[in-house]
Length: 426
Image (cartoon, rainbow, N blue to C red; front, side, top):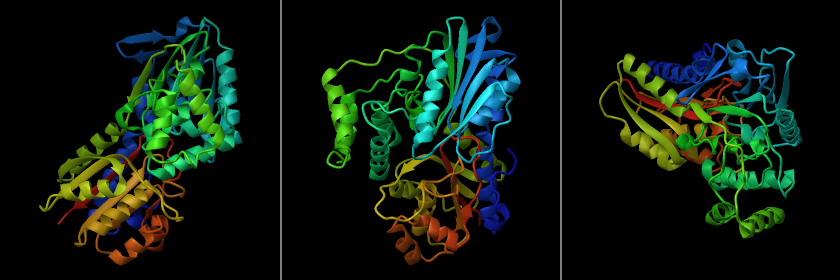
């Protein structure tokens, strides 16, 4: 992957900041599909949990990749297996994957589904319907697939977009959001493979807490253990019932009354990488730099996560906290930002001593509704009152743009959640 952060020189001004940058770069390198996929696909063989599948035994081997890492995952598979044909759904604006004409490459939308997402979902559905009993479907799945494959069930696309927006801004966890999404979709919750005639497997790069296959890209290739009643419970918990589109509430209530579950074809779903890969890499590099390392799981409310991280930082010199996960932000203002930028701002608002550096980035390179991956900043360089003023409107992007502390990567071709580090050097 090389150096992922394009403006590294501009934002790594002090020694602590340079160390923080190096630790973050290690996490991004560990998330590179080119390093990960060959451990599971090589020699025209797919390695699953406890067994191997030789692809030469099948008439047709069709690769179906979707999500933010779809392009690089497909490239790695193509180098290591004899793929007959394939369809690859990539984020709009990302670099075109280096694949031959036997692949259909379709750009789709993220984070907000659009008509492109619906067309992408239809293309994937059509592809699975052409597969026969002597064929093999190789799914390569990564985070972002939820928005990139949108095929509404009993609602329209505008309803789904409105529902997703309300849930995201409410502070709901990704698992809760995906629970609702699955019950409003023709492809999620295992529906994509429900009528598939052939065997196959799904290799998944996880960006969600717990690495549950049914939560990764909303689980298009595996059975959904949640119910319509669970989806209604999420909406009730976050007090969104009165704001949800009427068709959404009607569809969920109708499903809850009907009961039952989706019958889906069972294929192996194997998680091949997760946020833990990144955290391990950061811990290793920080140790090599001479730091005493603590680890924090960065899930839950962003302010609480900020407090947990700062509380774990030792007072001793050469100490650091590495963290990974996906904090949630309850959006109250109309500013621009994302989980990572807001987390860095909140940590800076807690620590007021000089000599510390904090960084947090999304491994996908896109944080919230901005073009930044996150931020890297040194303590006591931005006034606390200024930080509070920007946070009041969830406007962390403008704060860090003003001070030249945004971390810029562009699309990274991967997605294993968020990663960060808080460093005390002296």
